Length: 393
Image (cartoon, rainbow, N blue to C red):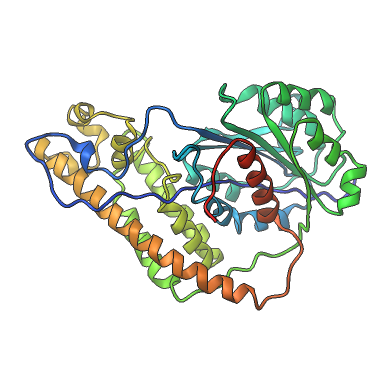
């Protein structure tokens, strides 16, 4: 069996948008939403990204590279808009080529369906393990096309990234049929060969991208990510911890997801303080959306209404809110929203200074071979331009 390596891709996009800090509380109006951070238009453009990664053989270097670059990729698209509106980002994560998965599924497993909760994607990346197997690219692509709830709007970005280093043509599903299925649904398929560029061409990775309107790329899977440590990192880490305290978990899974948020902070911090800064910058953007478990986001995004909040069973509220009156609940959420807005503004200001410092340091470094973030950024920028998405330079 050939020694296999797999690639892990990550996410695009994020928009750093915050409203002015809360200055007044209209207690007698009862309108909590006017104190929240964002107002969401009825119809928003959407970016859907499905990540398919080969987890057979020895792919540890590639997983490590992707974990080290996921938040950087997100931050590359912090200004993404279409017709002046910030798009919704949904990310799905799959693994393929792992013998630990059933044969009748083509050794393919979905780690998460389309979600706006980036911590869930991060959790999936940190949970990955390797196991030698058969890498069926066609089977993996067909599974992603058929199992996900893809948008029917042709203006939305719908894209699959599949990565690995074994021949693209393997498996019981004809890869051309799978790619044509994706194309009929308006889904672009981008291929990343973890190895020599010409070998990737010879083993079908380039032709695969061409069939489904995507890009072919090759990367150095053994390149180690380097995080520049900046003077702003310490303060950003402090603000990140304070930011977590503005989240108000609700529902049966609120506490669990709040713990997951902190666990992903820890996982990131254990790699590098510089990487934690990149994650904190993402958390200060509108793409970091936790409306399914956080009351501040839920009210801002319309996941729940003011009335639903006030009628919510105490068992679905955090302990500190259970004894509160309706007025106290409204005031509490409004204050958390105002605090979050102020913290995000300070993180954003520090991130601009950090970017200047990091860019100066990178000028002193020797140019490296392309990595995961380079491949993802290039492909997404091209497809965003084709769909009339604007990115500030």
